[in-house]
Length: 141
Image 1 (cartoon, rainbow, N blue to C red):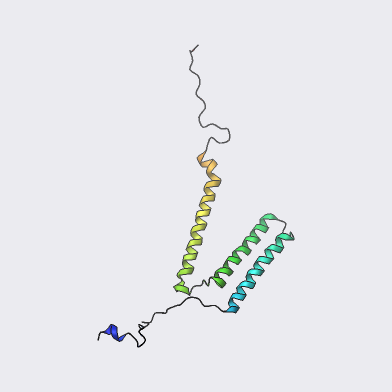
Image 2: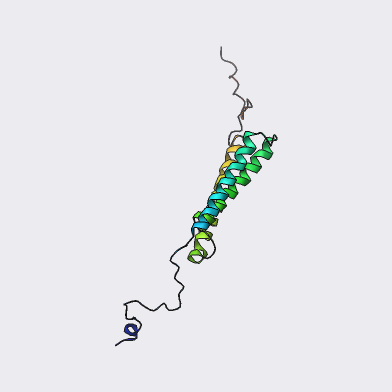
């Protein structure tokens, strides 16, 4: 009998070998209800702010609504997708952070190119010609 054969238990299962196996996130009804209530509140408050015209300064309103949207995303990720540093050794959270950073860089780069395209790629835009038209040759009747 080999050493491997002695590692098999009576039920046919291998030893754990000290590895922490996580069957995935487990949540209770109360955990889902907390997420649901937070989602409703984080939806109702911005709806009220917009419908009653509480914030009249448009850039401030955009920033406040954006903050509520980010909070809503975080609530969904934690309460419903169960993303934290413990699930799958933190790789799920790390890959999500990488994806968010990558998408933010891609969006920022795209916006930078689009806003600066006229100055950088089209110097003749706006009626200023890059090269003046060639003069007609002299001496032709």
